[in-house]
Length: 90
Image 1 (cartoon, one colour):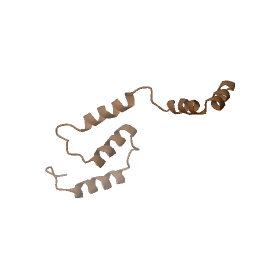
Image 2 (cartoon, rainbow, N blue to C red):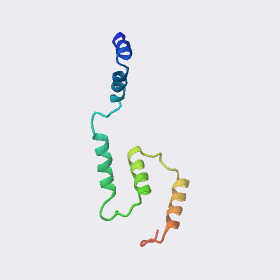
Image 3 (cartoon, rainbow, N blue to C red):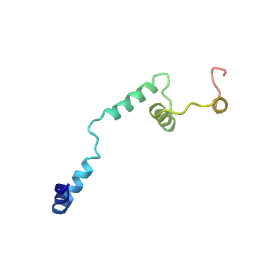
């Protein structure tokens, strides 16, 4: 730790740059996973998602969600039914 203090006092700007460089990810794997997930969600049959819907779906798929109770599931289905007319009756 003595070297850190010497670097901090002698080269404060360089020390700050070194601290900031630790924030840069060492690989792009996490970003590539999100793009892969987005490609799985946006197929030729499902290509009309709004930006908000796509963001929400990616977050749900990536982060997961707690299992919904039966009441929550029923409420969600009812909200979905009321959103717009569907080709398939629910």
